[in-house]
Structures are given as structure tokens and as C-alpha cells.
Image (cartoon, rainbow, N blue to C red; front, side, top):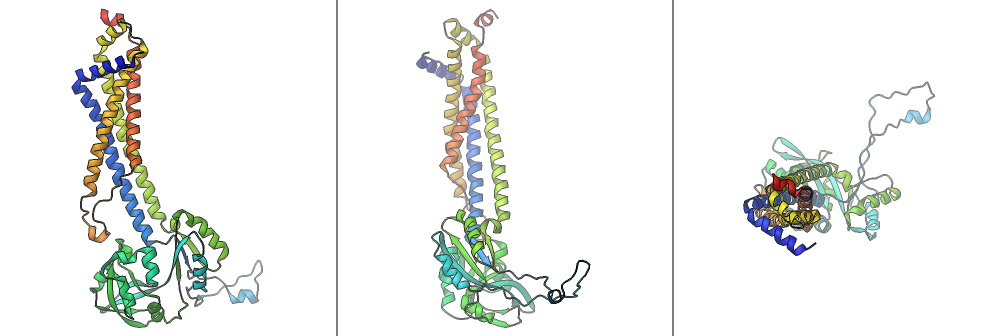
Length: 420
């Protein structure tokens, strides 16, 4: 078969039916451009939400929850038989502290693991922020300033003041943006804090931060480890959390299992469990994106099929003449396959270009709530794999859309067409 001649005939067919060719090409262009815009935006949103959550969440967290045990002294001295009952009314829990015993020793041990990026100790307690007669519930966390900045980028989330201001004085605090608004305070003001034991302290606000997550910004505050230990009237060894960042986030599960085998009387939680709801939302959005994108490309493929089918019907006489002059069925198939592939390649490249341009325009569009979510423009991904997949799908769609009509063209009897 002469591929040069088949290519020339395919070009001639496409040029003589410019309007039909343009409509077929635009079908591919629209499908692929919408695919690129949709998948770039949706994956960008997913990546933004995941990064925002992971930036604030340790890969592995060690803490000690307060548990109410059902242990009864009477049961220890008088074991119950199979038919005996011990009923204790209004049992009180033990006054058990949520601190991690030997926490700093555990921290140094964990930091020696080559998979660990760093460990940030923390002292966290529920407190009440007093705004006149109103008490606003929240949390205060004592942190190691340097480790918190390095591992969790807390210094980059400051709207007023700086995180380093915590080290420039005693009895100072940085507050979440939402909490500060509830209290009606700003940098330089003082707030009254009540601990669970009923102790009151006056703290100076030296900074306002925002994570972009309402639950955090309306309840959290930070101070130094020493300040919170002083507020809670605890010794310098008192810590309630060890927040671990891994060099590779996917090592967290195996590392958690290793720690569970080594450490006792503590609870160890990895990031997947802590962010289960966010990960479920990511899976739903990814599935929705895949369904919409495949639908767009499939519809474009059926449009090309219909156009190619109509093109063959309109070219019946030309096909009859070609077969009468010696062209075989496979030659006719090749001609129309070449037509569909040229439409697919041209439409695909144009679709990639348009999809990229619209994605770029979206990526520079100001986000309406930029100050709250700490994002200036809409999140958009420009992953080459998306463009490669879009081009491949467009190529394969047009290939199959052109194959079946071309097979039909190859089976045409030229005698019947000429007679008819």
C-alpha cells in the first residue's frame, strides 16, 4: 500500500469538507480542553486541602488520653463468682494526668531514627478566655518555638506580630484570628485566662495567626513550653504531646507500628487516622473528577464517530471510484483512519493549548477569601501527566471513532453505488 498516496487523499477529503472537518476537530478540542481545566482545578483543590491539613497535622502523634477505668477495689479483695454482682454507685475516676512520662527521653530516642525529620514537644490544656462576664472555651499549647517553626511552619501563618516574640518576654501568647476576634483583642492587648483548676492568669498578646481552618483559628493559642507549664503549675518535664514529622509521610504507618511495640501507656496516632474525613473527601472528589472527565472525552469520541460516519456516507461515490480504480478495502480503511487521526491530533493539540490557557487564567484569578485561607489565587495543578493522558485519550478516541466507519467504507460494493 502507498501510504503517501493515502495521506494525500485523506488531506484532500478533509480540505474539501472544511466545515465538517472543523466541527469534528472542535469536538475533540472541546472535550480535551474541558478535561484539562477540570482535572487541573480539581487536583489543585485536593492538593491545597491536603497540604493545608498536613501542614498543621503531625505525621505521628504520641499522647496520653484520660480514660475512666472500670476497676473496683472491692473486686480485688472479694472476687465475684459466676452468680455474684458488685454494684458501685457514682464511681469517680482517678486523678490521672495526661502527661507523657519520660517524654523528653522518648523524644531524643525517636529523633535518632533516620526516617524522622523532627519531633516537637507540646503541652496542651483546655482553658477559658475571659471576655468580661463571658468565658470562651479554647486551648493553649506550650511549644518549642524553633521546632514548631521548622516542622509546622507556624511562623509563616502569623497575621500580626511574629512567633519569635514569644521568646522576648514571659507571660505572652499568640492567638488564632477567630479567637482574637471573639475576644476583641489585637497585638499588644492583654487577655485573662482561666485554667481547669480555676487559676487565673493575665497574658499579653504578641501575635495573631490563622491556619485557614475555622476550628483551629477560633480555639487555639500558643505560648512557650515554660509559660504553659507555669500556668498549669507543672514541672519542666511535663509534656502532653510529641508531634513527629517524617522525612517521607508514607513511612508514618510503619513507624507508628514500631512505636506501639516499644512504648507503653501512651496512644500513638498516624496522620491517616487523624485526617480520615479529609482523605475520604479527597477520594470522593477524585472519583467525581474522573467520572466527569471520562464522560467529556467519551462524548467527544461519539461526536467524532458520527461525523466520520456522515463523512463516509457523503464520500460514497469517491469510495466507489477509488475501489473501481484498484484500491483495496484495506487502502480505503487506511485513508479514513488517517483522516480521523489527523482530526484527533490537531484537535487534541488545540485542546491542550486552550485547556492550559484557561487553567493559567484560573491560576492567576484572585481568590475571594484569600486573607482567611492564606491563598492568593485559585489552586491549579499543571502536571504534565494530565496533558499526556489527555492527548493519549484524544488519540485513542479518534482512532476507534474512525476505525468502525472506515471498516464500513472498505466493505462497500462499488458496482451497487455506481448503479444506484
